[in-house]
Length: 567
Image 1 (tube, rainbow, N blue to C red):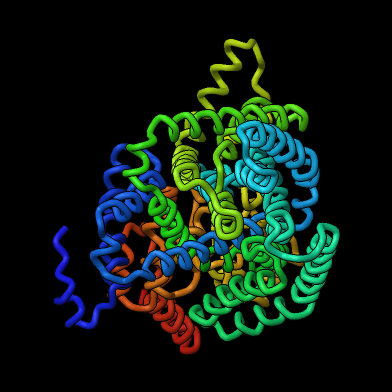
Image 2: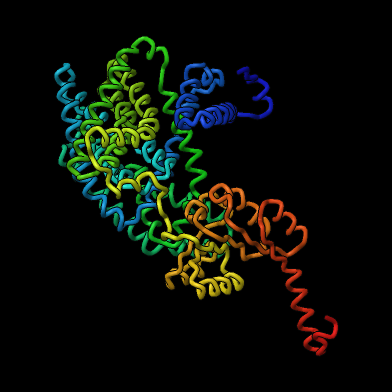
């Protein structure tokens, strides 16, 4: 691709903006091609980063700090991912992950680290090198696995919960290990007990502070912002909350990703969770895409060609080793075969923190350059293979069930269904807006025994409906994410009870994506708006002008007692 840098510079385009423009255009084209081939888009992101790193694109833009800036954006993507995961898992649900985290995580990390440590020591590596390598291999990619669970629509499945529990254990482990790293490598003072005590103290202080914020500050802040009815201010507040708590965790020596996860947990139990989720998802997807691109930037094709067999052997060997250990951990946890297969596929790779840990150790104890590059490339390749592994995992589970004469558990078949974020509604009505019209419609349908789900942006109304036990989402009907939560494909009727034609028009493409045949009804003020709604596929349009005119005429006739004379 021919890039005229002087022309870009004369137009006021900075090297970073120019690079982002090229990468995003290439990403769109690659994604379209992969989508046509029904392949994971993550592969395209990795390939884009690999091409940028090995085509001289970064050098062509002439800014040595471009890679570092992209890494900063990539870190933001991981933080936002963990924030959304925290929102989806409430504190009550997190309690159920204790066994997966403590038993599954300790078995997976402990056994993997022990085997790798012994192999590394047997190969002549020092104790410090062997320890760092052992922990780096034991870690998995939370970003890739959780993103793939979300893409498959099974991020609330038993496999996703087991994977998240083990991943949380890994994150806690790497936090403590990073603090111990100066002691292990001999590059800093202090003792192991001192470092562990410092970690425990910081973690306790952070949890207490997060609890206080969630109890006394964050709900009141979100309530005040919601009352302004400003979408921009609410989105800004959500991002500030996520990044602010993540930075607070980082300042206390903890992982920003873990801090963001805790921030999400704080929000998860509130009525704002669905609105927060829909606002933050677009930003998360953008920054997380850049994260996968930066992983591709770490792959050097020259090293890959020179050490191809070493990279291939290292990648396959580590995937098999971690897969076997994970299978054992799932067996000890009593996880059924289908869920266990998905868990193994999700966590068998190395992860982003593996690269971070190896890079930090490189600064203090150094690595053989060829060995380091082989590990980095193997890590990146293993992460790129995760989406493919997870897509084939159900087929592998079926094959194993058939050839091992195992019966599929009915409970685990739900792994492949879309996660239920609302009550199990079917043949129901979805009411967008709960003003006077919405209230009367809801009362009428309820008397007829028809279930209703309310979508509302007035926080006080949502609170009141929650207290009454009415299914309600604090969300924006114009957001695609909102319709993922409504089971609209099972609904019979969707109504826009407020006369805002733009909101209905913006919502229709997302609504039709999930439910092409559901009946839709909407209110409008003017005739021009009615035509617009009919053009976008709304079958029943109620014009307020016509209904008001009819009511005015009827009332006037009653006053003059001429009802029937003119009819």
